[in-house]
Length: 241
Ligand SMILES: C[S@@+](CC[C@H](N)C(=O)[O-])C[C@H]1O[C@@H](n2cnc3c(N)ncnc32)[C@H](O)[C@@H]1O
Image (tube, rainbow, N blue to C red; front, side):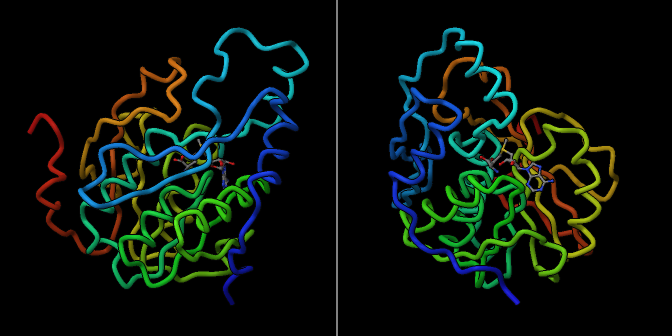
């Protein structure tokens, strides 16, 4: 049974969620750069002029305790979205899970690329809200679930920037167990120890908004695990080959 169908969420409600952690933050619609011609994907993200200086102590404590990851489009999510929109056959007509959806960027790109169904899952309730808002903003439909294993099987799982926390490494195996194919995008790690995952592409992408401190993670690697090896899409040959 799919989860709750995505329903529109107001920008005011999402802003309220952001300001619980960052009282001085605003949300702005920001468009992803470098998409294939004719493709537009917008997200409500923290204002690009958000001050980058030290935050007051109490705000800093809240940011560390409940980071609003969903208010950024991480380089990995942006790169995976571009990859899917450049290679829509990878998800077309498939049942896709966006695991660790944050803003929903990867799942929204999959829906725009022609996925038959997109399910999103995030442990952060505010991220689920953001995913719903951004899905409506991009006029695509997706479902939110709390427990993705109960929704298996999937044809493809997307994991963009979820391995920032090493305690999430077991998700590589649990995603494999419930899907014929898994795509992992990550700008923070250069190798996956799991031999099932094969490097398919390296793409340049910076987190949006780019508040400066994320520049070191400017290259995203994309890995695929799946029962059948398939040739890499022509646009996806790892750089340096
Ligand atoms: C750095 S953000 C990436 C968001 C988005 N995929 C992107 O690329 O912009 C990581 C997201 O994974 C979520 N997350 C972390 N651990 C998770 C878990 N075990 N299951 C589901 N979501 C998780 C976090 O709440 C957060 O929204």
